[in-house]
Picture 1 (tube, rainbow, N blue to C red):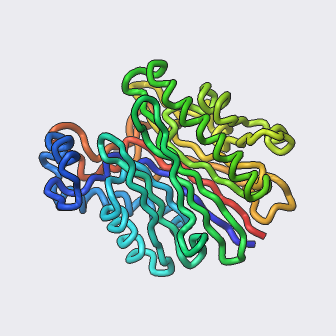
Picture 2: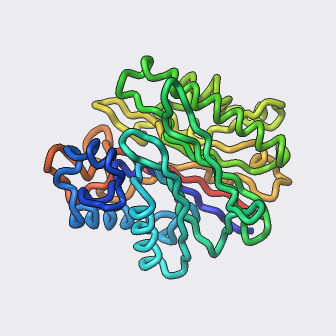
Length: 327
C-alpha cells in the first residue's frame, strides 16, 4: 500500500517583488500601488511562513502533491519548492506552473514529489493542459495535469480558481457556473478518452460552497457516493461535504465561515477494486498553531493593508488535504 497525501492551498497574493524583471509591463502598472512596499524581505518572510506550515502536513513529512493558487509566476513557485526541498531532504519536489490571463497576474501551480510521480508525456510533451474560461473576456483557466505514480498508475489533477464574490455572490455567480460547466465537460472528455475508471482529483478555491448551485447543478458535485459510482454522467464526490456545518471553514468573512476550498474525486477513486482509492480519513482542513485567531477561527493573513504586514501571518485561506491509497 502506498499513501498519496494531496493538499490544496490558496496562498493569497504570493507576488514576486515590486521591481521584478519577470513581470510584464502591463502587470507592473496594474500592481504598482498594491506592491508599493513588497520587497525581497517581505517575500522571503511570507515564503518562510508558508513553508513552515507545509512541512508540518502529513505528520511532518510534507504533502506528496501541493496544488496552489494566487502565485504570481514560476519564480515564486520555485522559491517555495526549493525551501521545501531544503527542509524535507527526503523529498525531490518539482513544479508545474501555468501563466493565466488573470488581470492581477495570479496563477495556479503544482509542487509534486518527483520521487513518487512523473508527468505523463504525449509525443515528447508533458501532458499538462489548460482550459480557458471566457464570459465576454477571459477569466481564470482550469489546469489539467496527468501524473503517473511509481507503481505505474495514472492520476489526473484538475486545478481551479473560480471568480471571486467581490462583485456580489449572485452577481458573480454566472462566471462560476461557466467554470463549473467547463469542468464537467472536460471530466466527461477525460473519461471518454481514458475510461470512466480513471482516477481524477479536482482541487480548487471555488468561491462557492459545496451546496451552491455552481458545484451541485453544473459541476455535478454531490455527497451521494452511490450516485457518483452508478451515474453515467461525470458526477464528482465532494469530500468536503462531511465538513460542512462545522465551525471551521477555509475562509471567513466577518462572522461567516465558509468552505470555499474543496477537493472532489471522480468515480475512479470510489471502488474497492480501484488501483487508487480514497482513504478512510478522507478530507481535512489543515490548521496548525498560529494559523487562526478569534471566535470565528479566522485565518491569520500576512498582508493587512497599505504598508502594514503581519510577519507571523500566512494567508486568508486555510489549506485542505486528502489521502489516497494505492494498492
